[in-house]
Length: 91
Image (cartoon, rainbow, N blue to C red):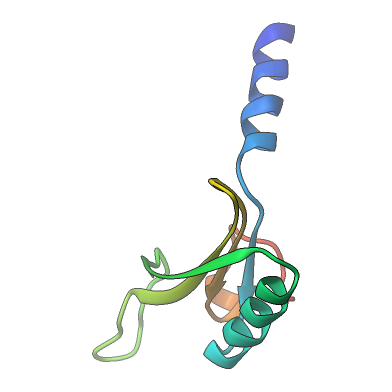
């Protein structure tokens, strides 16, 4: 059992942290800051698992990956706080 717990800890540590921001303009601002620091930022479109109660709700969300070489160091998605339960709080 101890080996399994250690393995789970390594897997969890290997996944990049994910943050939520409420606006697309916040994505641009964060991306500009990381690019100025020498990282590469890539915009992505993701599928959100949140329920859409409004008529015509769209499950697609805007996001950004911050890359250091070929490694993802941060994932940022645009989503409301209520919809973003799996990620860390908004930055």
